[in-house]
Every structure is written in C-alpha cells, then in structure tokens.
Length: 459
Image (tube, rainbow, N blue to C red; front, top):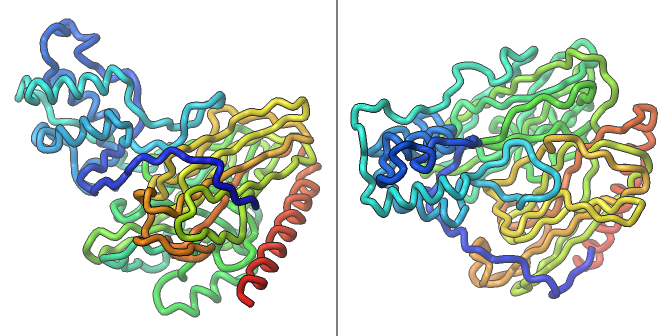
C-alpha cells in the first residue's frame, strides 16, 4: 500500500435527498419529439416523456420498487419535473458509476443526450400533458423470475426487522442448500420481499458450519458483518444490486456449489425512517451445458487502511500477476464514504495497459458487480492492477465525520474498506488449482503484513 497526495480525484457533490433518487432500468431508443412527426412542437408528456420514463425509470420507481416514490403517472413526474431534469442533466441519475472504457459492461444505465434534452425542453415548456386519455406510464414489473423458474429457491429462514435509522445495517444470512451432490451454477437472481430496503447483496459459500455458529450466537436472524463474512469462506459467488441485469454466465463457464454447502447472503440494508421487514429469496439456476471451466475469484486491495484526518488523497494500490491464461468475467469494487476514485487496469506481457474499470466519483450506495459483455482474454504474465483514492477532508461531501477524524479499516459504514473482487475463468481447467494456490499465497502474505502494521500501531 502506498500513500500520496499527488492525485486529486474529481469531487462532485452528491448530497442528494431521497426525493431526487431517479433509478432506472436500461433501455435505448425511446421515442422522443426528435423522431416524431410533430418534432417542431414542444414536447408533451403523453407523446415524448412517458416513453422515456417507462424505459429508464419505472424499473425501480413503481409501487413495489426499490425507489422511494413512483413515477408511473403524469402527476408523479410533473411534481418532480425540475428535480428530474437536474439529476439527468448532471448524470447523477440513473445511477451508473463507471466511465466508458474499451470494454463494454452489461446493463449500462444512462439516457442519450437527445433524451435528456427532450426532458429539459418539456420542463421549460411548462410540463404540458398532451393527450390526457393516453395510458399511464407502464412499469416493467415481471410477475415471475427474470430467467424463468429457478432450479433451486432459497429463502431467508426468518424475516429480519430493518432498523428505522442509521447509515445502514449489514448482515449475513445463512441459507442451507441441502444439496446431495456438487452442482454447477450458471446464474443467481435475487428477489427481495421489500425492495426499498435492500441496497446490495453479496454471496459466498460455507462448507464448515462456521457461519451457522455465528448465526446461532446472535439473537436476531443472521449476524453482523462488513466486507468479509466472519471467517475464510469456501468461495465468492458474486453479487447483486437494484437495477442489475440478471444474465447467465457464458456457456461452459460456471460457479461450483459443493454438496451440503450453505449459501451466505450478505445484505446491506437501507433505513427508511421506520422499521421494515425483509425476507429475501434467492433463485439458483444450474448449468445445462457441459462444464468447460470454473470461475475463480481474485481479490485485490488492502486489509488495513489508516487514513489521517484531513488527508485529501490517500492512495491504495495492489496487483496480482496471472500465472496462467484466463478470461475475465466480472469485477466488483467495494469501499465506503471516503473513497472517491477507483481504477482497475490490466498490463499485458507486451507492455500494453488496458483500462478495465474507472470510477471518478464513487458512491457506496450505488456499488454493484460489473459483468463484461464479452469475457476478456488475458495471457499468463498479465498484471492486474488496482488503485483506490480516499478523501478524508472537509471537501468530500460524503465524509460522514465533521470535522474529519482518523479512519481505519472496520466493520461499519463510517470505517473504510478497500477491495476489488475479480472473477476469472482459467482457459485450461487443469490450471485452476495452481491459480487458486498462487492467489491464496498472496492473500495470506497481505493479511500477515496488515496484521503486523496493525499490531505496531496498537503498541
């Protein structure tokens, strides 16, 4: 880990009240007045705005959605028209953190410039309704599972009562699979019972019974955790966030669920001002095609952060050299409120550097896993590099401490974390164990060094 003041990440204020939340599903090609015969007339809701709202917003903004209010009628949108135009113009909404790069990501959110201009022109024209007899904005609510009926559905054994206040509770819930044999998994889908309180979900596996003991030791359902799940688990299984597109892994590439494994579901809850009940269900889809290779998780980051009060650019860097050829499937960054900049690069043996992910205005509330539309082929000898920059100054609008105070690694949102989880698939399945061993050795070395630093600072 290195600490410098040389990098000044872009600071964009995101002090946005819940009334400005304008999340949405991804769609392109919405009808606007620019491709309408009546293009010379001012845009109206029924003809120009309703299609944009239907395709980009109502995936979350409906009565049963994760957003705090609905946008399924003219009145819903009219009441927040100027706020909506503002967050669209600044691209704070729909929430999408990564900048465009050479490798396209699945489920990219965002409106076209033409769509944004159409909404602005509608607001400037006085939000005309148009044909009041037109049907209301449609909410794309699926009555069932996105990928069809899962092969296995696991539900939290008990409902959890989400506290009314706070920065957000993070708990891990143990869902026994009771599988009689090892199964290959191609996709996982999340179905919250109360979407408004689920910010994001991470999955891992336990084959030791350790998670059950942690669960039993806590009086409430599940047990409290942060980026880890309380012990060394049997494997990462990816994650989910509202608005994430559910898609199977590429054919022949799978995640493996061992016989009798427990699925650990770590949920970051959002407080709504009143106690809420949540009992999430997880749909698991088994692979139908022959298995060619298995996903291996690779973690970059630091196990110990110590960010001084007032430090504007605290930098964490890490790397891992691939010992074998792989395909990069996805990556998932994790940090809290002080993080401002995230960067993941691949330096190939020929010296070329490829940008895999760049986020210049991090927001922990919108973190999610990112899947590449096409898996990226990486040769043996490629160096995977990460850099995360943290701002613990008063200038960081997301800093939870006023005045700023020293922040270290910890298990609350007011502490900090630094982690990039990359999921790769070995090109040759016979190299899987060697890849896992190489990564495990680096992880153990990193953990030991972090513990030594922590011990010295506590003396």
